[in-house]
Image 1 (cartoon, rainbow, N blue to C red):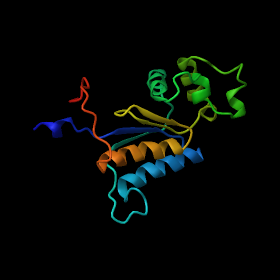
Image 2 (tube, rainbow, N blue to C red):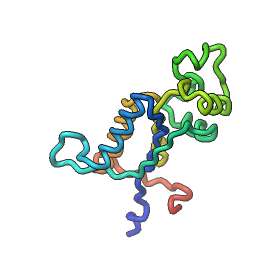
Image 3 (cartoon, one colour):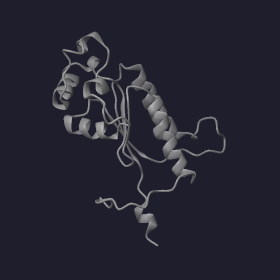
Image 4 (cartoon, one colour):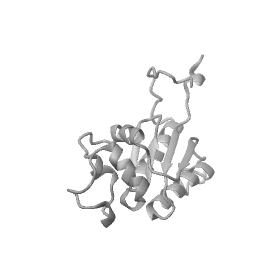
Length: 161
């Protein structure tokens, strides 16, 4: 009877940098999936439904920590996950290792950061620095929309907020 109250739209954030081609491509994919048929080219498809937040700054250290927990490989070094191969990021030995220091470097030197970072906060999924992970996030939303996967019937504290 109250199942409709449990349904929650996915909350997607893209930490976007306008000068990054992968970031621009990911943002276009996200916006297109909201306004056009998804998957693209499927004449009978519908747009996806999710809340999109575009943030034109890097995530803060707390957000980086949460995003790290969403990555498939839990043993990933934070600097390897978030920092780019751009020369301004420094050599591996010079790169920061704490999330606080990575957030500070990304704020002062955007070229050192891997753009975009796309996060589905509701499902606990993240993509860093590429569009393949964004496709996976969108496909997961499509599968739920089309009934190919069931909404988890799990107690989530604060679901009503």
